[in-house]
Image (cartoon, rainbow, N blue to C red):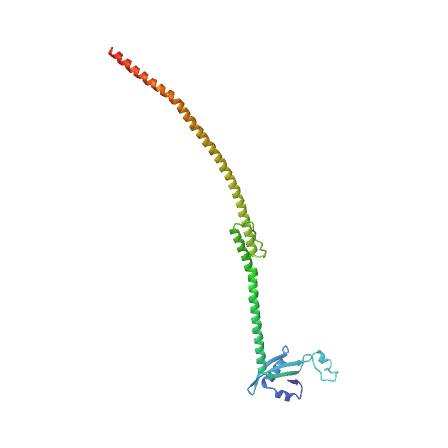
Length: 245
């Protein structure tokens, strides 16, 4: 690490620096908005990293370095020196390797956490409402219409749950109407059965009445038919006798 003062007598120190380091110092001095930078240099086949920082005068420095003070006067933001830190690049390489190792490990941990989080979210937010609706559908298929869904997720699943409950309410109302209609139909069938029994009894009475009437009328009618035939034969005989006389 070297400390360089920007004043007369420091030419020897600047001469000890490499060309790239001197050019970087000159560039940082010319640019007021930039105060430090890192460059890579090679010496004797070995790669080095050089961190260069320009030191500028601040208000604390000016409090002593002013025309009335004992030290050389400085102006605000005037470059007064530079710090050059040089070290072999392999240390940086190991640091970079360690950094990449930690970054990869952090990425693996973050990826595992993301997978676990996605699995938990999938199980709780997506699959759990679907399982509840499937169990509800199985109960309805078994004939249990009193069950209702209680999903309250504030999303489309809750809307689907409400629609399912509304469908069950309609099915239950339709079943009540069908029960009432079946009850009324049973009453009508019972009434028709009673009327059929009455009609059967009336038909039986009618048959018995007709049988009795036909029996009562048959004997007199046969007698009348017999007398009529006798009278007819008598009339024919009398006519024949008259014709002979």
